[in-house]
Image 1 (tube, rainbow, N blue to C red):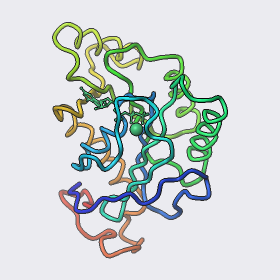
Image 2 (image 1 turned 135 degrees about the vertical axis):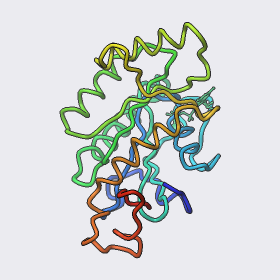
Image 3 (image 1 turned 180 degrees about the vertical axis):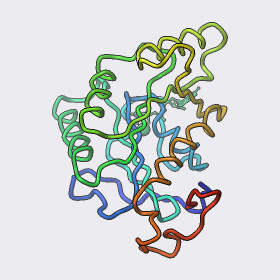
Image 4 (image 1 turned 90 degrees about the horizontal axis):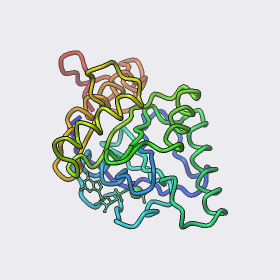
Length: 220
Ligand code: GTP
Ligand code: MG
């Protein structure tokens, strides 16, 4: 996707704030500090669009970023951050669940896992939950630049086992610092977008709907 525009559409703190309508949505999920906001920024080529921080718990609302006026990238609060009150944690959980279970939920959930660490029980729960909810999801290992050589190989193997991938298959891994793995991740996103109903020619919901195609694949 060639990105011509991106902006924060709404920072949602209540389900009533979630945008309605047919635009596809790509959600960024995972533990606090795993690199969700950083990944969103590098995908959109917009440093500083989503706020990042070395301190966990930076993203506190569901931030809907509108891309090319056609797609939402949704930056979610992270889970597993110990230093917040039980009340706030319940609020975040309620908000995230409300988002995931609504009829206009995400078309693709990117589930980020830090490549340096073992996936946690909470990662396992999220994965099961997404599977049961029938939400298409993709596990993405982050901060690949922090690993080298043998550590990288063992991290890939560990993640492949966790994901149940066939022997010899590598999971999707990225670095928001070096840009490694970003084109491969874009291919996954583009694939989801190209299958989305908004792009059917008969649904003329805007000037670009069903218009341009490149090698059979709609462009945004
Ligand atoms: P919360 O909003 O708190 O849940 O965090 P987040 O998942 O959005 O993480 P964020 O993008 O804010 O990044 C957390 C920290 O990790 C920041 O200091 C980033 O600079 C750093 N970081 C993110 N991605 C990478 C990466 O690929 N490589 C390296 N070296 N650092 C990264
Ligand atoms: Mg964040």
